[in-house]
Length: 111
Image (cartoon, rainbow, N blue to C red; front, side, top):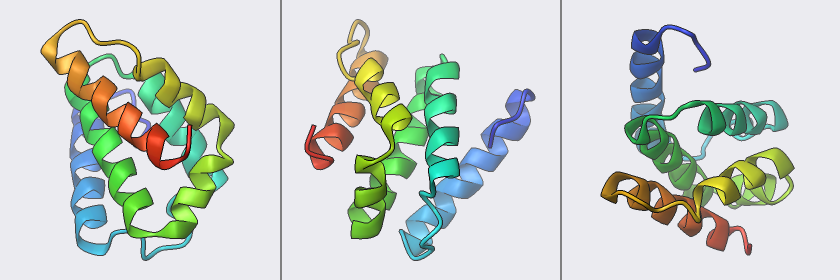
């Protein structure tokens, strides 16, 4: 996912979204510490709400389809901080959708 080329990011994130929709959290390594760090980096570096929403939907699907991923999220400090940074922001309607998704994920993690 992390790629400087926006087109590559868009295609790879859409592919990941489809895989997560199809298989949910079947792969136990989906939210490994390394992948959680990648999600945290992407959520803080991507400024387009569309990109952020897609990443948050992927993350939400993973944690709601597999308890192990939810437990992994609870111990992923940098990812939780990234989510907390997105949750309170809510100026435009696009940003409020991002904030709402981030808040939903944080609530699932008990934050």
